[in-house]
Length: 377
Image (cartoon, one colour):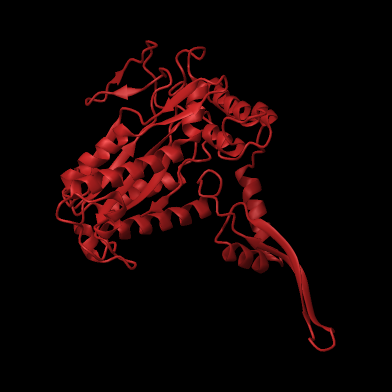
């Protein structure tokens, strides 16, 4: 399908006509009320007020109102996406440096910026650059440019484990939960207390966001903070330093796994990838996260993480909207690699005994689970 194009002259004419329209002020009030939402939801309804004694209708009204769509993807609705990013920023900023009910003393608690990645399910086209800015040849022999649609796609589609990739994506939330449980157990061991008594000594708080990658899988960015038993208002136990928290996160990511059945009944072990990045959050964090004055990086890091809350998928990679029918793939301009992921997710979700939930399967393939800020304690 080819989108209709509008010439500058036609655009100016339509805008002039709108401004001179007798309904312009009504339209403007509606647009302002929904914050400029590009895809508002139309709600139709009615209400009646009755006299309790006689049952007579005293007042009656009906009509249609508009509500913002609330979509966090900038590619779907820039206005709602911007609002979501702003909320995510303030949520993360206050959690790292205080504010909005969180004491400033929380900034002194051990804090880490953690990235957990998906494992490899087969080699893909890559684009790597040296420190001097030179592009390193891919395994296929080409030097891919930044917008090359092949980047992230399987080098050998026939041997690529699409089933394993979709199963990992569908269960990534469970894998995160196991990671969080294992992390608390390791911290309890470091304190020399039982796991059930950990809450009496410390509390683990985090905010995470899943970023959709070009190869079709997500990885998780998380800000993790260790507090005292009453949360950010109490100091963390002296027995756990930032280095101890770093070691516990590393070990927890390495230890956890999940075993599920593939469609043919063989077991599939799901775990995190080998690339686990753990960085301390301090006032002297890497210059890449500092402002022009070299000041504390909490604001920059909050913005860095919050941007993933509104990141959409690329045109050639997948879709920013749910897939309701497998036939919809015929109308999507996506690569064969990402088409194969979506088809695999669909097949796994509609079998007589689904290996994954159909909704999770679609999300696993089309980016629907990506970029959601989740806060936990």
